[in-house]
Image: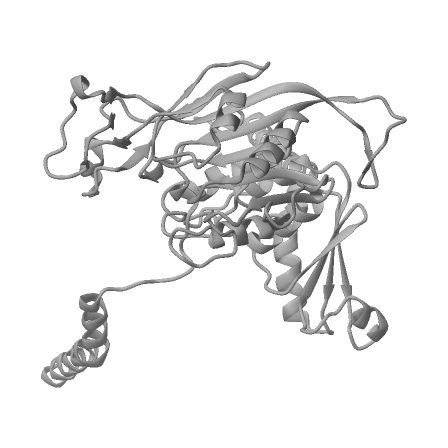
Length: 465
């Protein structure tokens, strides 16, 4: 190519055009970075970002959220809190963070009962919650507690051998009761033989597997509670109903005689055939919508329904097709025998019932006779097994989350369904004995010997040179 004055001018124009366009792109990217934010968390388990459950909860909050951190002038502690709360601010921009020095604000510190540096006080609307250990599970649970519109009282029947919501035996519901408390529910127990009335502020009445016959008067009180629109959770089990047959007739529910067995459980290393897995759920039911974690049930019976008294029935828990209802003895070689009365799966073990009822308006915990009755949706859940929420089985699969979904649905807190944050899975490192031995020997012997050998090799080469 022949270089001329004109060609030099073209080259200069091209070079300057490139520089100008390059600078223009840089300026444009800088401006775009101020208008749009993109974040990516590549850590295992997404430890540096909120879980989908926490994000879903924050999106349900309509009012501003506030965090008040009681910390001294400690830059490292305040920076750590600021980074943690920043994850919530990224999802909910109207989240405010305020630092309070306990040394300069002693009266406010005493009024709120602050005892350690770094405590958080979370506020939403006119309710507050104090957090001592700052992590996503504790903070999100606290937000869920204060976000509930009102107190939700879950009343468990006692006095006839029912599972205890505060008990520690394997068959009790103590762990589940603790989880409900963390979620903001108020747990109460009620012995109808001693107190023959169900409190008017009861959000859900729970019948958890009685082991003795209920008094006819107690059964009538329960039936009256349901008749007047009360929400009910009935955790049934194989065997007799212990006097609750009239309640079952009111609901149009029948508990089959027998225990469900599932040969497919052996594929998962379960040797007890009465322990069954549920892996598929009704996507049209609010309780199990978007719920995809397998749940485990031990000793369940099948439920049949005959809708009446205005009830709308929906089956949300079914066993796998190869399961069946065993009506014989659970001993020896168990086989499906339809001639004996065994029923082939899939079988319903969890149903939800709804209906529209008229209830009297309640003001300050008292029914108002001057106000016209209000229409509301009454909700009932009946299961053929209560062991899945017991201390022995609660932490298997999705049992806990399913139980929380049931209570949230029964209390009409549908927005909290499937909001169950879990800690990041990579917070601890567990090594086998072999791995620990290899690492120890490697650092104590192998690595020093390798370094010594490298030193000797280098020294010998230099000496020969």
